[in-house]
Image (cartoon, rainbow, N blue to C red; front, side):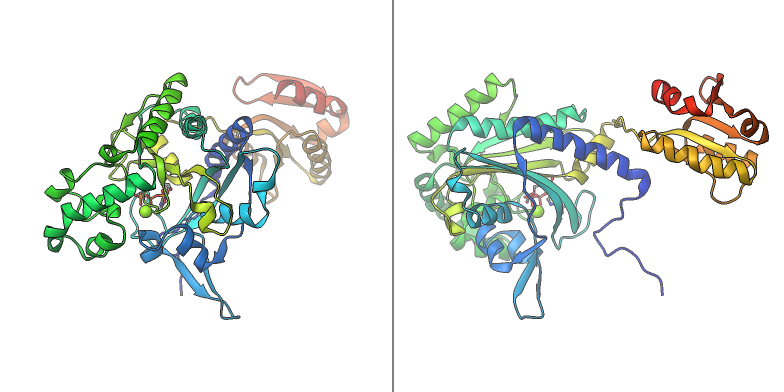
Length: 422
Ligand code: ATP
Ligand code: MG
């Protein structure tokens, strides 16, 4: 019997984790400066939360959820996204009563969707996302978008495109919905069965269909932007103005409708335009969801957020040939010859580590030459060799591997020497 990772999942091996941690540190640092405080919610929730919060007509709820019954007969679902959980927690903990509004939250962790596996599409993936709940100010829409852009720019991506749209308010959506039904109904037989269901339930979702997106009626479909009410149009103009002030370039795509049911007003996506990124180019998606908090049992409070996966961010880096500047180097390798020296080596290493100097030694009884090779492979900045002479003199040559320079340092000065030179 041999075992493999489940389809659509992956092991992140030690050689890759440094990259992940680097990205995570950028995400944490930018969350700090934009002031989106991290929230950690359970990996599974009541199934109904997602049916409500994500929407019954979405692909996620219809075919992508990992739903199971626990031993107590409750229906639970591995979270497919983070917004519903964040909003559930916001309502449960009555954050709408906080003196400081909007409440700005960030999250990072695994999400689960039963999807067809392909590059950039996994069944378990890590999303970072933010939510700003409690403000209907176009300035916060621009802040959320600029945080997402800032993340990609900070890791070094250049081939980026920001696409925005407005889905308008309820009046906009109702008028547009009627127009869509009129547009698609006569020929709905030519569309997939999902679209046929969508026609009555949520015709906007037809525009987001992955199967039928080349059907000629898609191009001529009534655009939401033509149905924007005056106040929606004004809101959208304000968002654009703020983006301009922040120096963020964007394109308006009237056909951009996001995958989740609850979006209104601002919707946006950030894509990679790098050659070789592959078929899936969306790095990040987000938008405004006024109404969601109320749907989940809270007061009528507006919100906006985005989500991005770290997997796609890393793919974009690869496509642009960007190597992250990761620090996983080894400061010092101690080569020890003989039992005495080995004891001393353990003692020294422990004093180095106590000062934050990364240090390692041999634990498999290798000869000196093999230990030296190890030090080299591990990329040690310094190497010291402890043998009888060094033990007698209580001093050791510290060799800098890159230059070959050596300096003799007494044992009791080693920590300081390394701290100054590492
Ligand atoms: P898509 O159209 O690619 O299916 P979506 O509308 O389902 O995207 P969202 O639910 O908005 O995507 O998720 C936001 C972001 O999460 C995406 O832009 C992408 O970066 C990432 N993401 C979504 N699904 C996956 C997945 N299966 N594997 C890796 N990353 C994903
Ligand atoms: Mg999807």
